[in-house]
Image (tube, rainbow, N blue to C red; front, top):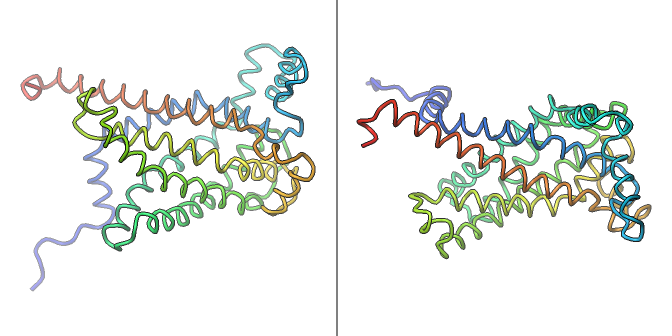
Length: 304
């Protein structure tokens, strides 16, 4: 005898999940958009510094020289133009960056859910679940965004088109390093914040969402710091200024420019992470608070 209630399909489950989390999805979209609009100029500046073969800042030379030199790298061909043209030059490649950022934000949401599922259903340890998730998501994300990432760098640097999969190996290694570092560090930091009662009891927060956000922020910045050498190799290959091959690229940079050159652009990269997360969470929380106040005004009896 067949059951009268059929099992819902994956699309029905997805539709129900979206309907139940509309405000959260809208808030995340608003936060990601604000992060993209305000953070893309920093990303463009970081890409241009990474492909430069000159030091980011030379302390032996006067400040005025370093400022002029840095402006020439960041603003590229708009260095002799007006302020408006300089600002517009930093927004080159924003369309492919939008798709890239959307996929990246989605992968961050998936990471925590997949890890939890692997721990609960597959009975894996947190480290095993983190490794499996980092390997799977790191590879999948690298393959999916390869074309858009290459297009973004080509527009930012105005370099000839390079095949999107030329930089795939360092991109996979970079994503794997980032996801794995974030997975390993995030949970201990969150547990430490909960144990110490930080950002919870004093602010009278009913859930531990704030601790999760702060843990994700610290873990993401740490993951970015560890993956900066691989990110520079990836950017140089995308710009056509480095032969293919991850290890060959790392050794080539060390031989020609020294070990410190592996971390060229790290101040801008870490600044982008810090500023980006601050913009994202602040915008998202403001939007959620606005939606709650609007709902309370529309249904005063329910808010009592």
